[in-house]
Amino acid sequence: MFVSTGDEKEEVNDNPIEQVRLTVPITDDLTQPVLTFRTWVLGILDCAILSFVNQFFGYRQNQLFVGSVSVQIVVLPLGKLMAATLPTRKFKISPFSDYKLSMNPGPFNMKEHTLITIFASSARGSGGCSVTIFFILVLCCYFKLYMAISVFFFFFLRERSMPKKIQMGCL
Picture (cartoon, rainbow, N blue to C red):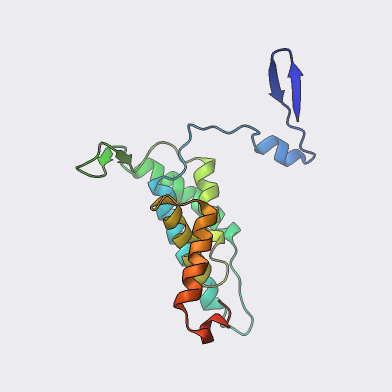
């Protein structure tokens, strides 16, 4: 909701839930880094570990499910520990480019924490969903394809490469 005060518009936080209103900002800080070294390392590790744990405990008679909330709780101190211990020096990606990457671009922020939770939540069942998310991200980031094209390309390749018996299964 916008409130007009003369020449500028001011956004009003009118969320009916008080806890959300107090903790979630209504603006986006574009200076906070998101796709950092910490995000990728913690996100991929948590996705793999959660996928393994859920698959492992899925074979029990009384199945046990570990959700992404538990990963969200564990990741916060790990992210802050990585922010305190990783070097802040910038590394050159390639000798042919001037692009540099820092393993520690600053303090661990809410955007990184949220993205790591999204990584972990993709490991709900087995590892199949994790591979799908990773493949689509590679198509988007590395090959510079749009998200919709990447999703279509993944499912098109999957249909062409799998035998008919597997296509009729759970995949």
